[in-house]
Amino acid sequence: MKALEQKILDEGTVLDGDILKVGSFLNQQLDVDFLLQMGKEINRIYKDEQITKILTIEASGIAIAVAAASVMHKNVIFAKKSKTSNVSGEVYSAKVHSYTHGTDSQITVPKDYINSEDNILIIDDFLANGEALRGLINIVKQSGARIAGCTCAIEKGFQHGGDELRKAGYRIESLAVIEKMSPSGIEFRK
Image (cartoon, rainbow, N blue to C red; front, side):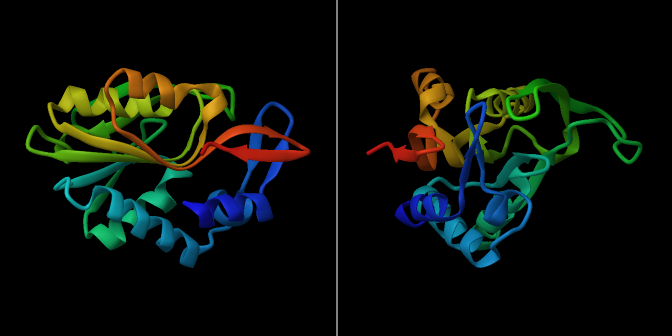
């Protein structure tokens, strides 16, 4: 998505440790009109897949998942990173390591929300090493549902998580794939 690549170049900042800061439009402050453009692009990519639900992980994946859901007219489920008192009953769970935060979480989704009849689209904001997607894929597999594909707004191609998931047979459709990045510049995959 050329518009996303340009937005990253215009508003993104590369920080130490291969971190890309895009808080001005995707992570902390939300450019809703632009998110809706991304949602339309995700809908275009998956329009023939008969998606029943969208699955993401809290917190930064929620905005892009909701943008896609608003165009696709589907419900969004988000995996919580910690069990809370308002989650009762049986849950699907998986361990996920956050590259950005350097922490592990046990993500959970109530079993009532996904079943074997579902065709799930997984959406997240970033794809680096692929840990969040692997955790969400694990949850979908536990439910017996089908995985239609996975979409991330920004993939750090140089960290190879997306390439590994593609080799494992998953459809990964990232809206922008960064091949190289440093404080002096960003190069996108062609």
